Length: 108
Image: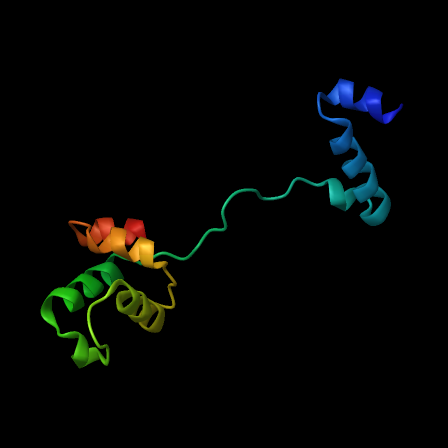
């Protein structure tokens, strides 16, 4: 079967068929196995970690934790240091605006 015929049968482009045949030739059948797609799963804060973070933000001064100010970047540093969770400045901004620890946990 030609690549053009295979493309018609599987309703894909000839380029896709070419990539499949090349991958098969180089790596065998394992290259054609379905792979996980989409965004990489990142670790999230547990509810108690989110509650603790909210408590820290509302009840302590940043200098008590060795931070200059409560900025989005410093909150991100706090999360990274305490829980090993990295969050972008944008994500932190969204989470800080959250109205409850549960919402904070789902944002991060």
